[in-house]
Image 1 (cartoon, rainbow, N blue to C red):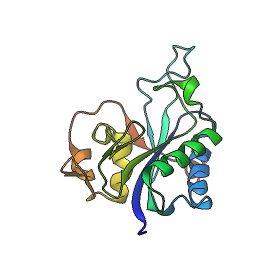
Image 2 (spheres, one colour):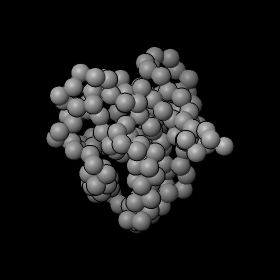
Image 3 (cartoon, rainbow, N blue to C red):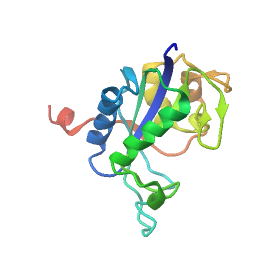
Image 4 (spheres, rainbow, N blue to C red):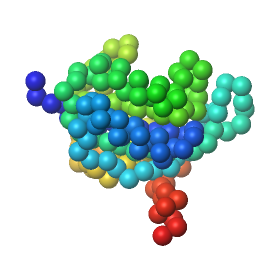
Length: 179
């Protein structure tokens, strides 16, 4: 079987966010899930619509987000299951956090070999790509001319389109800031 080209979106807004992203990227390779060929710079984004827990009304901490691209031998649903296992091992509790809760790690399959798929478990390409500056900005750093199936637009064109809420900025780690 020919390897599939995959684009993943990674995000974390609890705990050591930067370390969690690095761990997830390392595990993708160590577990033979993805041969990572490119990793974007990290962006920080507002965690709008999120709460730190179901028991709190306080705003959730901001997210760190990153996009990774590579090749996999897995089919989409087995890849999704493996990614969800990594999320759980990094502390994600889907039942406790609910659909819009704060989380230690979220890994989304944004694009899988330009496949269009709609199952109860997975929709490809990711259905909210065009709404998410925190995905488009780092993705554009890797592949601005990549076309999104079903949207008839490149990543750069989607990023330039108006209409997304919330702030997003390039992230500098504490190490980079202290240099």
